[in-house]
Length: 127
Image (cartoon, rainbow, N blue to C red):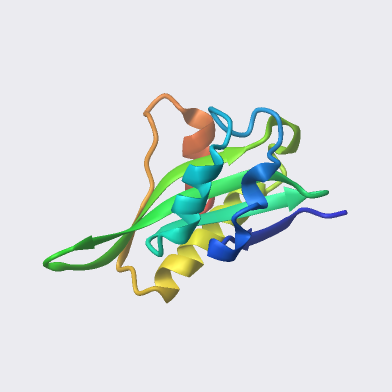
């Protein structure tokens, strides 16, 4: 079965119940997952393989009183078992497409200067 990537919505509250080993820093907290997915400014694109989330990109649409909406990509993660297969770049592209459709004028993505794998990924998607 191929990896399927898509934006999650509030209707996907159970989508993050099953995540691959090494995907996230901590175990998913169901209440926080529901709150995140239920907030219309929070966005998350997820990649699933055989019913397990193997990659995600989380973002927030940021509003400011005197600027158009912007998107801040907060975290990009791929399970060690699924790295270097184009999943992270596909998920970033989904979030960028979603942000543009929502009217975001800018999309922010950052990492530490010494995180060369992340910097390489960011360059590969045009950041």
